View: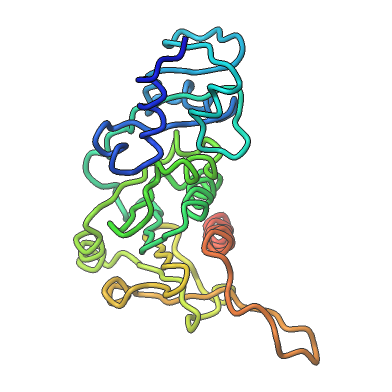
Length: 252
């Protein structure tokens, strides 16, 4: 039977300050919970569900009405898991061998979750975020990641130190900017850093100082038409850029 204390705990995790304090987050839906259960990075603390559960984690059977009280979703799923936020990775990856994403003040949790999913798709294991970025364990970000949060290291680091290290070692630092060079014409590196800026303001001047390459996705205008979208959604742009980096890497 679901207790008031359990309801209070799960609902409290909808807020970042409580997630930080208790080092816990919530994953909702069968696919999401399955991903958490299968992940070596994630510890599932408790599972709540409206039907039978055959796993080996502590489980509480709840009614549909009780699940509505627990859920952060408009349409609650049949299963929900409380999970422990994994520790940040020890040390840094070798950026002379790895390709990583740096997110500069991404504010929309849906964008962040989608970017985590994109990183997973393109085999990018590390995402570094500025302190101003939305929390990766925000319920909307977790949901938008579609389970990829269970596999990708998302760390909030002092990015100035990381980018200065790149400068010292001549590691390429790419940045997505509207006035950058056409990415389709660039000889891209298979390693290094790609910075994605804030949805409205782009890359901050502070991080922009570390760029070695400014790049953009070229737009296309139909003949005779001079109007169109001013920019792409941050997650959409990330997907296109990552695809181009990986395509170039495959070409050798």
